Image (tube, rainbow, N blue to C red):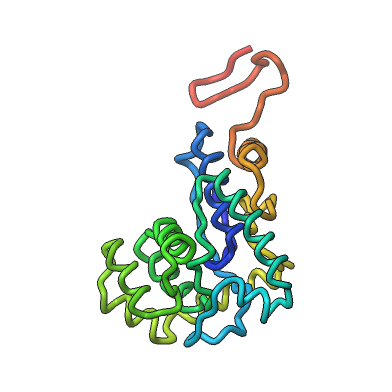
Length: 233
């Protein structure tokens, strides 16, 4: 069963959603049959990749929120994060353009390390206060996962992975996805937002039952039939 997840590195609800989704999946007997594919989405592509802002400054200047309102909102998100096992540190978080980070994610996907890279990017951004638009930061994250430094630097600084990132963004647009996180379950159902663990668990079970699990025999007994060994009544 395939789960596609549209996400942006600077979205705290994407990190919360990831943790809740993974907790739900870990409880299910078919967890090893699930393939997760991370998809790129940019909440603010207009940001300058050469600049950073602190979170309060960003909400005040870019979104027009009064500082008190922004502080209150971040406090609420911090509490939500604790419920998902995340210790957000918005005092250190640097807001910047995330396109290069998404290119690194696509490189990691080629190495079957996309989930590990997604986690590493979230930690770098929300916990460690690193600039996830900086080439050397991204190369270091890649190296920590065993990806060659020069391969990572080439991926981040060239346009060779731009198409893959833009394809994800266009696919989201084509499907009417305007916010993240957004989970598509085996091409049949969707879960929007950082839902609680039980919501993910129920959605995964229903999707598996309807799209993957064997047919349920409603007859109640074995009627006359034939198989490779012959026929029986």
